[in-house]
Length: 337
Image (cartoon, rainbow, N blue to C red; front, top):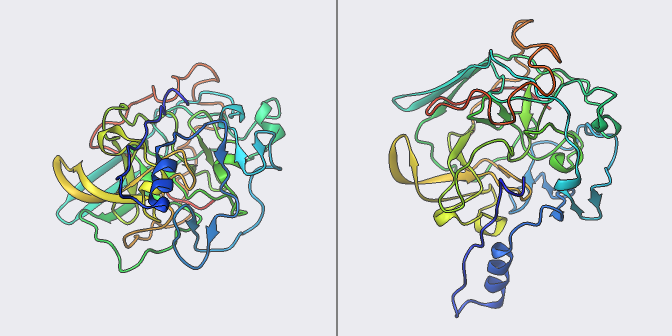
């Protein structure tokens, strides 16, 4: 993860900048320490958008998936390098997804299976992850059909993000917000597989943070687009202009900003989100008007391989080396966690 997400400072400050501006810029320039990531617990708002917070649509629904705080969590920080991942390398050859623009709309459709290998779910008692998270859910196919605005506009004010799908990644997987069911930092507490994903109760495989198996580009350039938010705005990887790593200080309360990017084979100034390694990782709120994705739309039985019936553990391709995303074909899913 450290090698895949090498971090670049954000540049300097104006000599006339005030103390607050210099402090913010210095914080932005410091690369996140993967062994001391800030824990997002408590950084949840139910009343409005705040930078570095998740503007959640609902209070905690119950306990999260983890049985407790693992030893990689110490006080207000957590160590990504010490956190276990779910074992296995299950391939999903039936994964399908398409994203097609037609006029003012962009239609996303597919079956919600990821185009990369996953861990074996439910988590097996023999897996070291089982001691911390006994996720009993299996990955299964879904019915995915979403129509987004192809040229989205910012809403008059940001809106909250629900505890279900908030975006769709090019891999075919759903993106959820940063919270578990208890409104704690899901990336820190819950155990995911080597691509930072796991299934919820309806079999929806999803991510709460930037997946380490997704290719986002080099450290010398702006990250590639890795998916779409449900308000129609694009989601890019962790680097901004000139390859500078994006921190919360560089982004707005929804974890985005505007400048020239390449979309639909054209370069134009556009608002977009960034997926980073700093909580809230992806969207803190919707900057535009989100569409209704539908919930718990399970596919017909048999479309998803039962646990262990894809590629046996260790025989699938390494994360990111399964069927590669084909531009402009991208992936998506619906469900609730």
